[in-house]
Image (cartoon, rainbow, N blue to C red; front, side, top):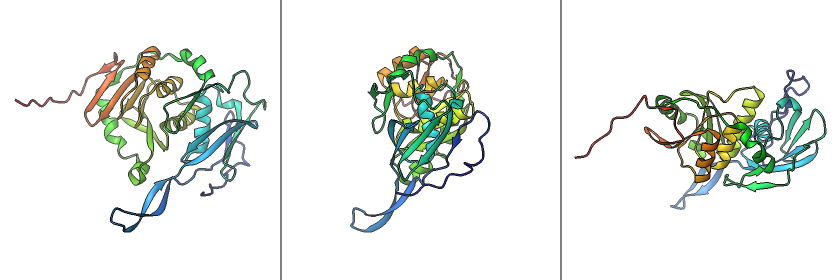
Length: 290
């Protein structure tokens, strides 16, 4: 396994209220030898996949399978989206060590995770089987979102720009991509072996930089399942867009939490669910076949 870059600037104190972070991102793409259907030798790109065990004050929490490109943000986003911490200021540091395949999280109190039962887990439909802790479900309905307007023209602009960001997928496939958008602008884009990891990574960045989800759109290449809807609500993001479809539980949960779903979104096509605030300002011409 490739060794991560060394930790940078760890001797300097982080800004007030921010945890100290390692800088241990891995290369996402690897070149390997293969044979094609003609028996000819060729080199191809494949993506990385490594285990990362999160420990909080020495207490083992979960092992995530990931590309490892932005592990510190992934860890922060996971902790946030599992509602284990309410503020990144509660965390003193996140140090990733790929030799041990561990992310050591140190809290400022030094007491680990208290007051919640981390042993009760729901296995989800996330790639690689994601998990939702019971404490996440307990707090979910505290995060109902207010109505937010979304414009059809913004959806189309965003879809047109997304194709320029999925570099790992174009080079090697085998990954999901997620993007945080405002209007038609793509603010950040993350690829990982699972869409839930990519979403958690973006959540970690938002959490650390105090970025509101209120006026944002979240794009994912994966299915709009209940897990993805939950995380959108916890991140305060009122609109989910996917080139894929949705599940019935995802749809019902979106109605409960006030999340608009834009599914099967490609080019000028989409289906909108729970879409009372969708403004049709760029309706394409219908082609009639007589």
